[in-house]
Length: 366
Ligand code: UDP
Image (cartoon, rainbow, N blue to C red):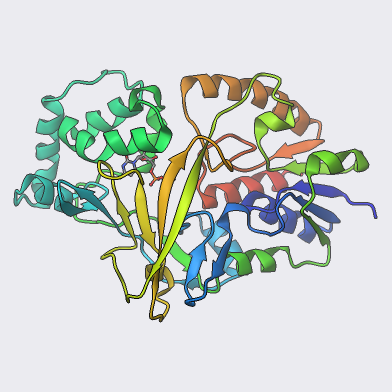
């Protein structure tokens, strides 16, 4: 069988790209190393009837209506607005930083009109590089040293296994600082959790007459059979080029799942542990789909340097290598031989919606 397009990987980048190309009338083959679809978005219902995210919690959020409308063709979304508490100084404190965070930590009673001057004073009493060069600078310049040390310093060191001063300030942009009382983790217009789960959503995305799927197959072993096809590659960027500029770093997680005979054990879906314990956060899945069960299931996240790649590591050194790989990748894209899409293939700390945007953009150009 001849295929117009080979898609390496059946995660978000691969599945969405495959669907877009199939709808353009191209014959598509997805080659996926794992024996299942959905990449790190995979989920399943456990013995207690609770939908568990196999590779850690995934909360969908976007401001892009095209992305939202695309996914809504394949799933309904449960209304869900993510809220997170940080366990610090023995208290459960709303996070990201907003007026409630300040009042809880500092035992003050300021109102939203006073947040700006409060933070200004915190920043004025702190030291950081005036040209923001690292993660610490990016946070301290917004909220000062005390809030940085309580919520960010140790979490970041635990998560990335390195000093926050070695990390890119860009990571800090993921976490807003709010002058109001909005304690949601995300403020995007569209937010939710697929009602029947992510895995089911992926099954529907790839369910198209022009798409065939090969599970449990290594793209690098299969690629010699498909010389004339266009490749949409979603795996690790450095691996595609045989690590010729050296290895890029990826950060992994060890996840521990525990179930308890209890309705709920946490007051919020996720509790972050910046300073205590070895895990970074615990997520209680029942909060997402409000499933009725005698039990509740929790996921403890332990950052790890080895294992499946979950995160790209944003340091100047990795950035430098990325630039070299991307130059080669762009040549292949211009020649319409291979297109690189997604977190691993573009070596970018993308959220799910950003991956879909990239797939739409790149496949739209083909
Ligand atoms: N972060 C932190 N304290 C927190 C939450 C996040 O210092 O309580 C930092 C940390 O460096 C983390 C980054 O912000 O890696 C991004 O956090 P996010 O929750 O977006 O991480 P993800 O959900 O992608 O693991």
